[in-house]
Image (cartoon, rainbow, N blue to C red; front, side):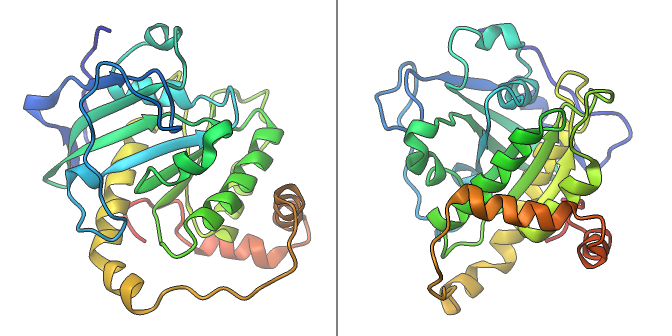
Length: 274
């Protein structure tokens, strides 16, 4: 695989690529999160979810429906072309050193989502990016289901989770408004950003935001996680689809001014704050 350098956008002094890391390293594996034996890769060290955050702990997993642009986002991050991933889509791990707010961090992006082995994928990351296409409402509903699934899988952990509306360049084909995406993030207590991988719009900002969110959670949530674990009240079980659609119906309701107000007032679009 050949790599092209990804340079920071001019005028953003808070983040840049390290001079020693202007190209990325990628790992091509023959399996996803299922635990199969990877090829051409070094064995990764295991880390406890509550261990101190270091560069080995900066692992973000891209999850979402098919054809929403997960691999395209990963390839822009890595500085590769989509053609490099055509042979084995969804089977790549990329690593890149970023300088964010004057501090270097090596971020690993895992484009390894596989619904057949979703439990393993949902345990692999220290942060998650849930991607949907703004031109596909069903992928938006799937993103809501994935947020619920992730909450169940990591129920005692507070993880950085960013909901991403990709393909924002498809203006005429848009089916999900920015306000709906923002309201969804408010309801599910996530961050939110819209991107266009094809235009390289907000992609660098997304991954800078992942690094910032990981640092913020490291600095503020570790003690809270250990001292006050989340307690869950048993409830009647509902299917993921039923729960997700019920919540989304509340979000998109024109008369639901309270949710609209919360969406405007809460800074879930600001990836530099919790």
